[in-house]
Length: 140
Ligand code: GTP
Ligand code: MG
Image (cartoon, rainbow, N blue to C red; front, top):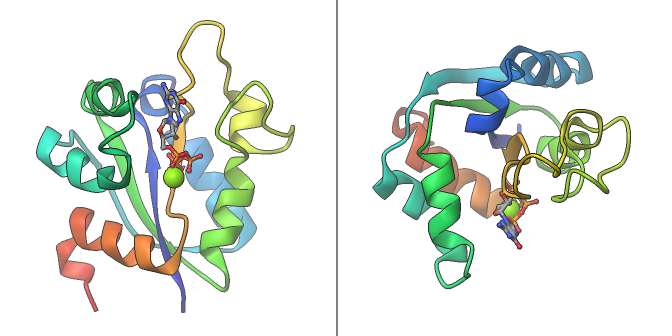
């Protein structure tokens, strides 16, 4: 079955939302394959966000993602990649739809847009690439 890499970002962990994100993943019916709270080193985050290496927000994003612990999750299920991105909502929490994680819980008035609580892989290729970075023992 399909797998995806989900992160509860440092803002989500600091706000005590890790359990709420896990609850929504499980409530939808996806299966937790791995869950680990950890501080990510910069080199790991630079690999994770390699596609954004040339964007102006790359350095601030890596700074933010290394500012505190993240909850790294592998979840599985039919169309889980699309399904979790749907649960997460669009990138900007202010305009993300109500009912989504970012729409219900995210905000931009006291935090920049990069602090949008969660990450979810956006394709089968990125999911397998990201799983190999965060959970090498799960490589198929
Ligand atoms: P992820 O699930 O985290 O990958 O979010 P996404 O797919 O909605 O966004 P994208 O992959 O385009 O960007 C990755 C992350 O970079 C986003 O989640 C934000 O944290 C951050 N980001 C994206 N665009 C911007 C931007 O214009 N400014 C800033 N400061 N951060 C951004
Ligand atoms: Mg993305």
